[in-house]
Length: 69
Image (cartoon, rainbow, N blue to C red; front, side, top):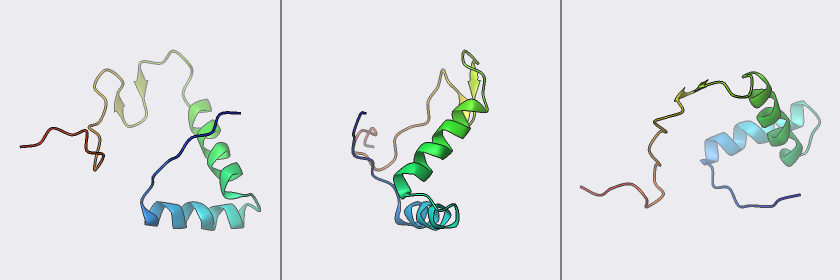
């Protein structure tokens, strides 16, 4: 099992936590379930992933990696 730190907005955390309670899962299990469901919805090898073109990823927000003006 791989462990990593993930920073998410408070509003998203609240939504995930509420859904986990509804589904009687831990927060970790809920996130895994949602990721697996999302990845299963798109066949592997598909060029166009949900959220846009895989060739041009969305810019990082608030990470300090975005170019500064």
